[in-house]
Length: 141
Image (cartoon, rainbow, N blue to C red; front, side, top):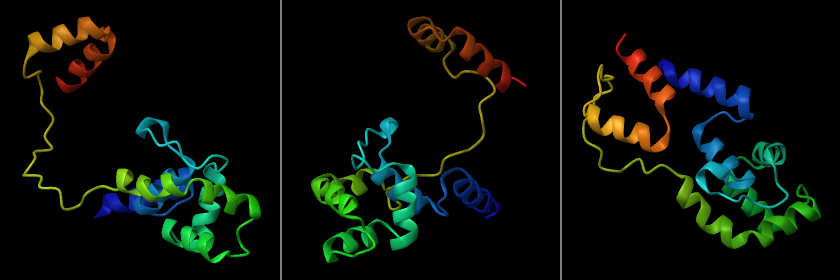
């Protein structure tokens, strides 16, 4: 699909990884506060990308750690070892479940709110007046 090429180009440009799977592995290593991932302390985005480039994927990084690969610095190996319990479970949290039973979903955007009263209540409660007005205006054309 054409959007896949755009996605891959954007991932390379912004994060230095070529696929969604590589992005997920990078997010596990460096952390992602928006997803509640603490990451491996001391491994930021650049180091995560470098490790993935060297070892292919998270499984390769962990295999290198287990094998005592000399391509890992002593500090990197220690950090990966100290984060072993996190690294066992984090990939399960990050991965999309491609076999999730999702029915047909329309990608057509609504032109008006389905429940204007509920939207007004939420807008008031959370102070979203300007944002919601702009969204409703944009959807209405």
